[in-house]
Image (cartoon, rainbow, N blue to C red; front, side, top):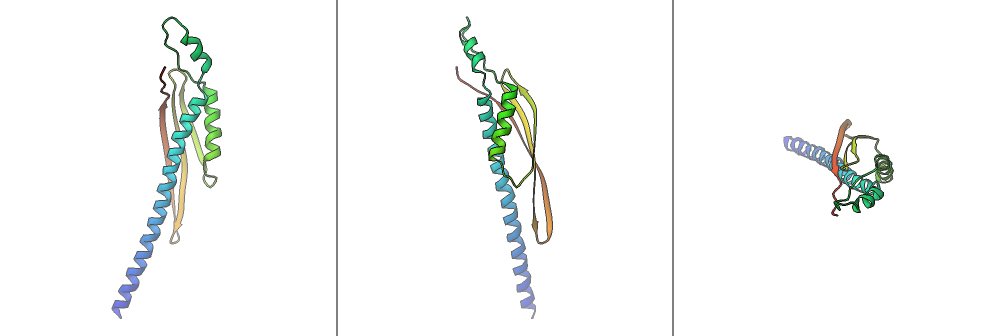
Length: 140
């Protein structure tokens, strides 16, 4: 009789552990995808906001060193548009762009989201913040 209780206990613990592993894997995978999305979106938005007119104008100066500059408004517009096109509709995101330097081109931003789920009638919620500081590098 006690062997059957132990068997039931081991089976129940195994099911609980497998459920927790699947839940944590889902959270980790979705956040890894989000961090890659933020990195790629930031780089693409910086290239979209690249000021070609200032680059061409300063490339013909006497010192021959062109100025690499981005447009602040164009960056914010492009980042939000690109992020909205590729982000998951199941989550709510808060985007905080707190530093955009036009020259030299540097951007600092945060994307906050909540991730959660239910495991064995327990609600789990995680507040996750992804932060990136990016500098546009070019060769001239």
